[in-house]
Amino acid sequence: MRLALLLDENVSPVVAERMRAQRPDIRIESIYTWRDGAYVSASDDALLAAARADGLVLVTYDIRMLSDWSFVFSGDPPFAGVVFVDSDTIPLGNFGGLVRALIELWDRHADEDWSCRIVFLKARA
View 1 (cartoon, rainbow, N blue to C red):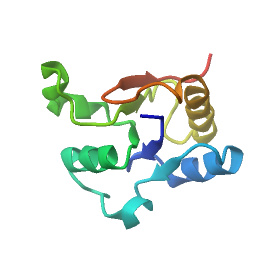
View 2: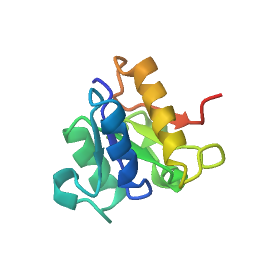
View 3: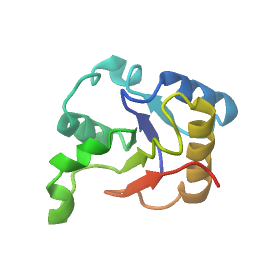
View 4: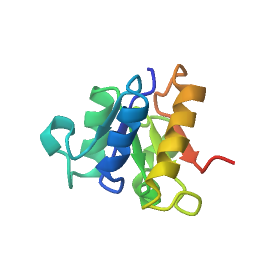
């Protein structure tokens, strides 16, 4: 599955807008507009299942999600992929830093298999 991104509630839709302006070749969605916002405030399980159905990798700052994911350790994770953003190197309001880091991630790894993959995204060095 090629990399396509879904920004969750913790990520401003401005990030998707800026990425589309800079790189229209990258598929990126904001939870606020994807599926008409139907998954805003949805459970993690429902969101991950819907994202997987659409071939989208979730981008989130919410590292607490991992505490509820016993399936990660059972070997059968039901998601298309998750990118956790490191808030220590890319703070919530640093839209430019997040856009740059996501573009770099896409440029380096877009053609890899993203099925059930977990990545921790940090600012570019």
